[in-house]
Image (cartoon, rainbow, N blue to C red; front, top):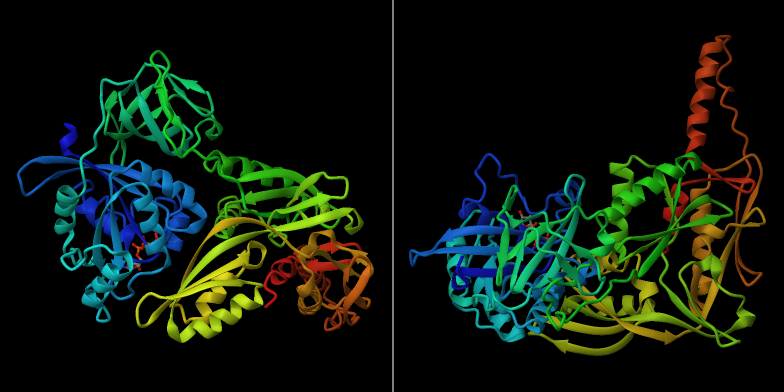
Length: 599
Ligand code: GTP
């Protein structure tokens, strides 16, 4: 296809503004899939993604469209993930495009991620095509929202297509706008090969499928290529376009095109998103800018509820990593929980998705420890250590300086909830930087917050305090010196390493108390009294007690039938299985998750 008839674009939006629904309609409208194959939200093809209604990994698809001008166009639609955890993937997907369709929900208006994604798109010099979605809703206010887009983003929006992705209204307008407003790619097909990897997935039959955008030159079957960052070399065995339902091999991709190649690549390790592909025989001099190795930000321990499942857990994690190079894990042992893994994630959503997949797809029963961030500790001898596991926290006497990661966060909220959200940020040790009115009714609260305070339930807290109206977005700011202490939990006098956490000294006392109370609620009575203590550096700061009880399951079985007695004893054993023996105390798996929510 001639470059002038190619359009490479993505759809960006705030979560739930209708990006995937619009993508589906575009697929329908270009007849990329017939009705029978049309499965709602085809681009989100993982079962979990569909269920949660979120896009986890970027996908791309090539479509053909005959425009009103009578010409045939090749559209490469790149779907981008919609959550802060996956911002780097979004940025690489954007780098593969010339333009972006910006979907704004006409009943909601501009939200945190609308802005965040717009800025990202502008950073990549993308042409933006705003559209107003959900005009079928009675609460839609397209005129007001169009003004808001103009005021807040500075993008002309009064004549933007007004669409109902759900009802299929206005979709053709969107496609025509893509042609008129988004520029065709410009690249030199005769220059040395230069292509960007924007995604890679593992396929058990073909090996890794590398999704790429060719900027210059040609990528052909049989002509060896190398990846400039990892240095890996491959000879493509299949090169082609991504159809909506199947790959469409075509042998060669030229400058301006989006497609894939396979080369029996065994691991995703070698095919990092953001890397530049070039030819082995005539390499390009300069790699494409913007490569970054993604690093995990949130860590937690994952243990099998039943120790015998350890090999299965290891297997499952390895399988998941095949398809997710940003998941990291190392074997670790806990005195309390036995053998398990310390896993690193891009963020909490990523963590939740992985745990859910482990439990659902691999049928594992898991115990996860409280998520932690990475702290930077300078020891008195000058050594600097990164600590992501409270168990490894050094002795306070050896610490010269402790630092914790901070983020720059923007919360966008209707004015009514400002007070309550400011209180929330204050409680999480936030430092207010700015407060701006976006229009008469909406405010942008700018806070610096410790990452450790927002990892678990900050998003939920914001939503509940604002009845769902506020949204937020953050980026890493760096390490800031902080008064940190390690909070330990003792059950019946024994320290439980899996329950330790690193907390700020000022909140340690309150946290210790809450933790002890929560544990008391979650640990059932046992044959003896169980003291639950919270301690800092050996000093007890809180105590609760679970009273003793004796439960005789046979008590109500006064009759002589032995099979009935046996049944009851079996049942009791079943119940016990879900418990974890920590020293002398039995703790249900739920206790570990319950203690995560301390508010
Ligand atoms: P993420 O993938 O999580 O970023 O969400 P998304 O932006 O892709 O949103 P999605 O397409 O999943 O739509 C979110 C919800 O809005 C779904 O329940 C859709 O059915 C609904 N929705 C999308 N478009 C429209 C529309 O035009 N009108 C109405 N009434 N609902 C819509």
